[in-house]
Image (cartoon, rainbow, N blue to C red; front, side, top):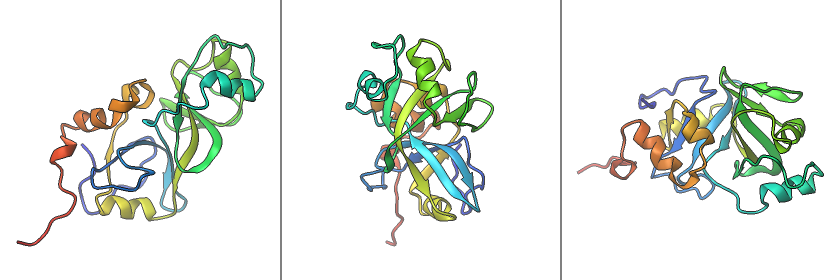
Length: 193
């Protein structure tokens, strides 16, 4: 189950962050973030996996990058990965493919920032599961731990359906349901009577 104790665990790489209902920051409200890297020294970096981008479309993006064939033989979901560097693309994918510019997150997931993976996907090859995120989320050293202690986030193990599934509008609710939690029954602050 997610982290509820006073001190959040260090090294949350490969875990999900689920925005608590009380988190009202528009950039992260009702988001699910896959943490690609986390350490006490460097902070954290992750990708929002439940905010589908309508524009540009995957085909349009490949055309802008001059990646053939057009139309592509295969398409993947395109997400708004976070508010940092939102014009930079990251492909989060299954570990059955790796190339230059790939960062192994854990045994199951790899992050690639090179165009090679998009060329492979457009050609109908590449990793079995993938999503393309424009932008990312980032926290400085200690910042994410403080936000978890302030009940802004709940942590949870990832599932393929939540990370790579196409039902973006339901991922936030499904992430809570996987923990056996109804987000509408959570209370963010405790007051005195």
